[in-house]
Image (cartoon, rainbow, N blue to C red; front, top):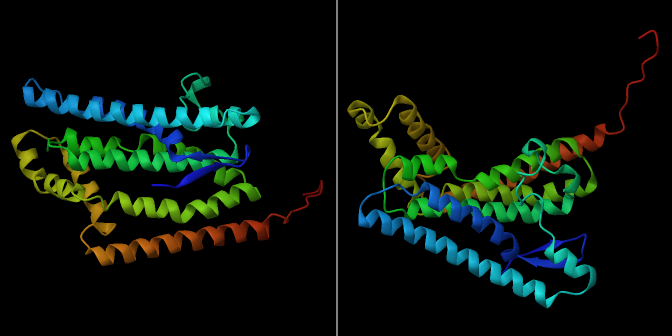
Length: 275
C-alpha cells in the first residue's frame, strides 16, 4: 500500500512503515509464542520459518523508518519523525500499566489505528496460512489475535465517549467507515473460514474423545457463528455488498451521534437551593 499517515501537529508525512515497524514486532512475538511446540524436525522447521519471516519483516520496516528519519532530519521535523506514538508504545512503565493519557494527542489515533489494523490482518493471515490444523493453531490463535488492535481501540473508544471535541469528531468521522471495512475484512480472509468451519464440524467428536472440553467446543461454536453472521458463506459479490452496507451504516450512525451531542451540548438544568 502507498497510503501515508499524517502527523498534523508536526506538519509532516509519516509513511505506513514507521507504524508498521512497531506492529510487526508484536506479530513476530506472537508467531514465536503461538507456534505449536513440536519435537519433530518438521515442527521445528515450521516454527523457525515463521520466526524468520517475522524477523525479516521487522528488519525491513526498521530500515525504511531509519531511511525516512535520515532524509528529514531537520529542526522540529526531525524530532517529530523520531517521536513514538504512545498508543503503539509499551505501557509497562506506566502506573498500573494504564495508557499514558497525558502523552496522547488526537492526531495519534488515526495512524495508530491503521497500524493496529495491519497487524491484526497479518495475524489472521498467518492463521489461514498455517500448516498445523489443531485447536491451538487455529481457535486459540484466532481468539488471541488483534491484541494491538484491542489495545488501541479501547483507548479510542474511551476518548470518543468522553472527549467530544471537534478534532476528535473529525477522527471519528474519518475512521468509522474504515474500521467497519476492517471488521468485514477480518471475516473474509481467504482460507480462514474453512479452518474455522473444520474446527466447528469436529467439535462433538473432539469432546467425545476427551481431547476438548466443553469450553473449547463452545469457543468453536461461537467463532463459527460469528463468521456466518458476518457473511462468510456469501458469494464474493454479496460479501462486497454487505461490507458496503456496513460501512455506510457506520458513517450514518456516527453522524447521528455527533448531531445528537451537538444538539444537547448547550442544554442545562438550573437547580435552586429548594430543589
